[in-house]
Amino acid sequence: MAKKSFRKGDRVEWETSHGRTSGKVEKKLTSPRKIKGHQVAASTANPEYLVTSEKTGKQAAHKPEALKKAKSK
Image (cartoon, rainbow, N blue to C red; front, side, top):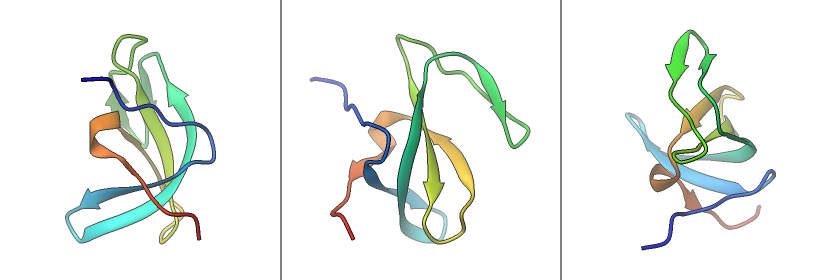
């Protein structure tokens, strides 16, 4: 199965504890870093995506399998 891939500006959806939410991809993360005090273990082999929530404006890192392309607004 091919890995999902997203580009900067793609609108995506993901599940949260409060239900489905959506936002935009800011960038692909390919190296470890901290985001909001949390360590993100991204690498070139296992990238994660930095996304900004449309609802809250907050940023978070998500694995590609947690994201789904959403329709444009």
